[in-house]
Image 1 (cartoon, helix red, strand yellow):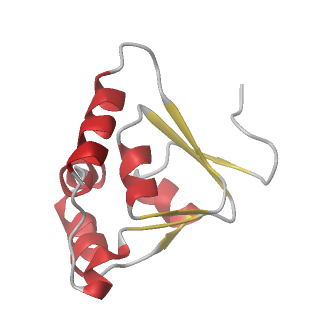
Image 2: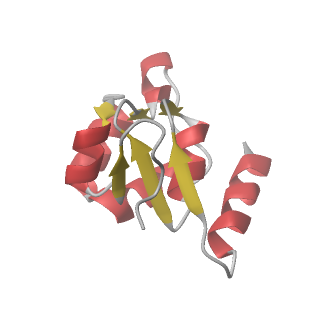
Amino acid sequence: AQRFGEAFETLAAFRGVSIAAINGYAMGGGLECALACDLRVVESHAQLALPEASVGLLPCAGGTQWLSWTIGESWAKRMVLLGERVDAATALRIGLADELAEKGQGLAT
């Protein structure tokens, strides 16, 4: 867990622009990695969650902090404490995603 946290901190501190392209599922560490990026582009069928609570754990690589900074405390609590999964449209609406792309289209220019 410590090494994942260190890797994601390094990504967050990267001086360039980091963009997470989410095609499918971003669960647990995958979402934590995406949260460390500057921008998140999700394809329309994507699902995002921090499901650790469903097995008695909590995210341990910075996800709880980045999530609350990104989407606010209320939604972050729903996702962290209840393991709530959000679809791509919801992710865009709550600020978890910066852009929604149709399958195979990628980032709009």
